[in-house]
Length: 216
Ligand SMILES: [Zn+2]
Image (tube, rainbow, N blue to C red; front, side, top):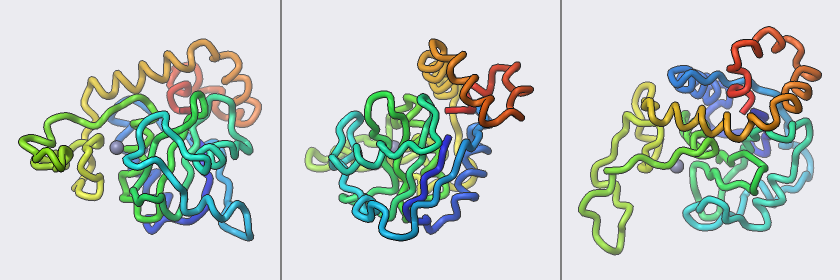
C-alpha cells in the first residue's frame, strides 16, 4: 500500500496504520507500506483536497475529481493500492473506496476514525458492509442503523463507534485473501520483480506467499 497525503488527518496516519496492521493480522494479511508522498505543500492540485464524490460513494461511480486524484501514481506499482488522505469529501464522509477499474485505492478524510483506513481497504479488497444493522427502518431512511454492530470492522454504521479492536470474521478474511489472489495471481512475476527492485529486503518474505497479500 502507498500513502499519498494531500491533507494530514486528525488521527495520526501512524496510528491508523498500526490499527490496520493489528486487525489485518487477525486475518492473516500483513500490511507493507511501499511509499509515502507528501502533497500537502504548495499549490499542488489543491481542489482535490476537498474531493467531489458521488453521494454515498457507490462502487465504480466516480467524479472527474476522483479520477484525477487516482491518476496520481508516482512510485506506485501497477497493481498496488493507494490510500489518498484528503481534507474532506463533498458530500462529507470519513472515507470512500470507489476507485477506477484496475486502479486500486481509497480516500480517507481528515475526520476519519482510527479504523477508517482499514475499513476502506476492506472494501477495496472486495468486502461489503455486514448485514443486519438496518432492521425495521422507515422507508425514508433505509439505512437507519437501528442495530449497529460496533464490534465489526465492516460495520456500515460508522467505524467511529468501534471500541477496541474490531473483528474480521473468517469469511471476510477468506474473501480478502481470495480477492487479492485472484487479482494478483496472473501478475505475480511482474509484481514481484517490481517490488524486489524497490524493496530487496522483502525477498526473504516472499517465500511464504504472504507478501502478495501484503503488497495490496
Ligand atoms: Zn464502508
